[in-house]
Image (cartoon, rainbow, N blue to C red; front, top):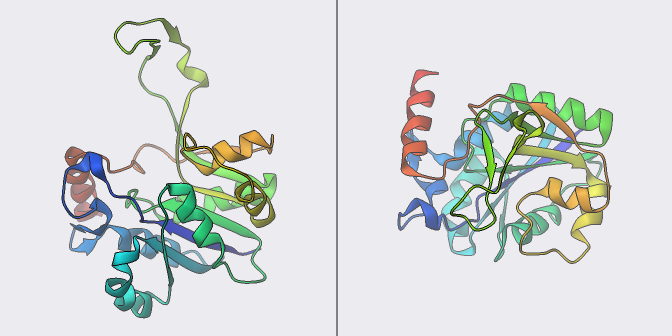
Length: 221
């Protein structure tokens, strides 16, 4: 069994507050997206890496394409458009597809292998972590409506790995702008998706404090 990895680096990163999208900033002496490439490169079952970037970044990515032997494709308006573009580039004789956000540069080969192993067993699996904090639901965003039992709450991460035919199936349908990850699409067709506890270090870089913490962790590895 083999898989292709789609690394999504097409976002604008508006919440991060820099002119350059965060995934292209230098993080511990490497561009942020490069750390994900290096992690997938260490997994022998990964036979192809597809980097999805904004169209204006394509010329700049030529050197990385040659350096790491990867495919580079233009992204789309929404995240799901970028994943769809990546899917079009998947090679033949591939069994599974992994989708990973370039904004999670702390991923390593071990959790990738664990998620892939679970995906082979169940057809689909995602990296995730159990909620640590007390969870509150608010209808108006101002006051607590009720508390939610955190033992049943998981925070979704990436990579998210699925059988290629399943992923192509959900991406052939109309997709709502409210969809935030691929597992959500699998829910709509009631396809089983396993949760793989990959801990808390594989966090998403969303704010500058996340960037500083990620850099510190990478420097100490």
